[in-house]
Length: 116
Length: 115
Image (cartoon, rainbow over all chains, first blue to last red; front, side, top):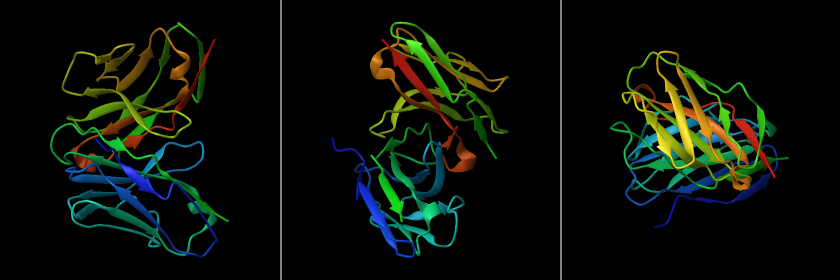
């Protein structure tokens, strides 16, 4: 079946512009996660959705970052007034369930964001 | 807060040989899960192996196995009969109920398999 998809694959933007990154999880997966991976680094957790609600936004680095999820499906991560330090690969993952049981996360291919 | 430490930024191994990647973690939780993910240059994160903390038996998946030492909070990955396709970044990750099952990753180990 189809895996997690993300769009765009690559995004180049100018400092100060807003960007929207999209994630389509595997159908039926209730949990959805956003991570950021800076060059040469591990993944940093940003936000977690269980259904359409976000019980954990603790990883969002500033109020310029926000995310929403609708219909227990698509999620968008929005970065306002982008800064050069926002340049990274943004990875989305989904899981059949969040709080219960073991939690294998299936990752999308990521969006590489470059802020000039 | 949980932390995951991978002390080997880079490693190399010859084809067909065995290599062990180390990982330690810190947590106050009792029920948790540990993972090794592989990230090739395509940047697709691929699950290699998973270990439930309540299981004493070490997980094994074909050429990949772990040495899980719960008391020492150690979770190393052994790759046997290394293949050129194993060349990738390897990330150790921890998850548990206190974090909503979000993954906490180490900084990764870059593994190069040479002919």
